[in-house]
Image (tube, rainbow, N blue to C red; front, side, top):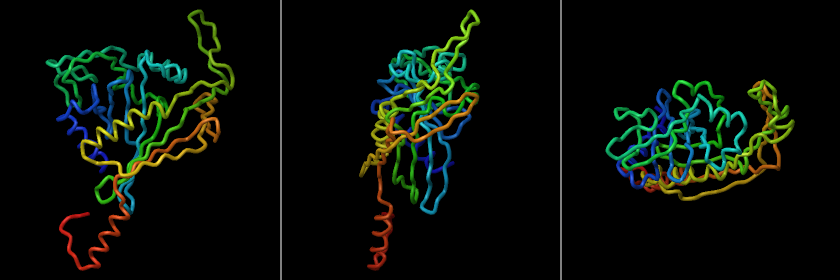
Length: 289
């Protein structure tokens, strides 16, 4: 188990004991996958997914990288900003299209509909909303880039979370180089996106903002891990060009703005320096600082 898996799981279990503070309708671990969860946040119509890509041990501790996805509901304003492929997939058989209705006394899991499951979820009040997640056995058939809206990185030093970085863009833009054709019921192909026209135009910052706030204030907040400093860096972003048949190329473009939000929870270098000062003074520390 990675260190970040331990930290996030601890946050989740503590939220179970403080459901009124969680800002969650539901939360569910994704079966068969390590360090991956679905989040049904209050005030949203869609579902967020946070999944570990990799965790590397470094000389300073552990560095982990997650992708953040958002599966929009059909009634979401952002639904039409997703690519044609994402919209078709979201409306198709790969997704759970039913609603989940949970009353206090039933405690049914939104992922599997069972009252005898091992998922983490918060459902002590009556809620009705769309499941809106990929079917369990169909997840692996989805291309990794579909529904992705950003990346989140965590830095851990001496078993303590020191920093978190969210990377996204003002808009997540993709052009359909050869256009997009759809075969109608009459068998006739129709062009719905012209050649070199925009096929994807998702407001990345807007969608990431709510989950980032939840992560900072609710999940990490339950561990009393305050953000000591936040920096926001902006620069030229990347635009994607889809040539079809899985060929996707990216290039820098001032058409979009890359946005990097970094939160510092502990200054590891200052802590190390302070420890050296104590030792130089001949003091023995019984607790880590």
